[in-house]
Length: 95
Image 1 (cartoon, helix red, strand yellow):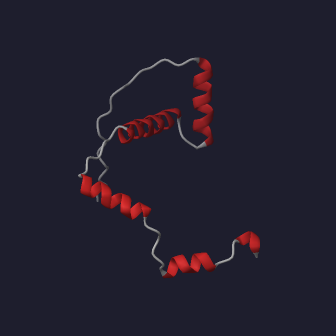
Image 2 (cartoon, one colour):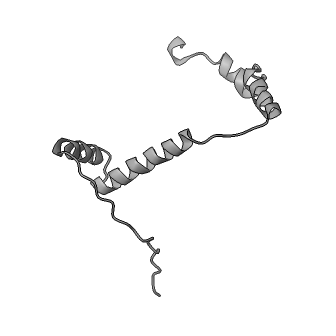
Image 3 (tube, rainbow, N blue to C red):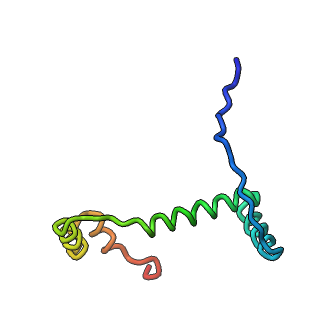
C-alpha cells in the first residue's frame, strides 16, 4: 500500500536584512520555544499581520443593533447556577 503524502502549498521567498543583534535575539527566542528561525519568524509575522487586520476591521451595525449591544453589556449578569456557585466559593487564599 502506498502512503499518500500531504501536498505542500507552493512557497515564496521573502528576503530582508537584520542587524546581528536582531538575528541573535530572534535565534534566542526561537530556541526558547523550540522552533527554527524560519518557523519563529513566520509565526511572528503571521500573528502581527492578523493583529493589524483585526485592528483595522470595522463592523458596521444599525443604531438599533448598537443600542441592543450596549444594553446587553450594561445589564447586570442574570443569576444562574454557575454564577451563584462561583460567588459562594471561597477564594483559595481565604481557605
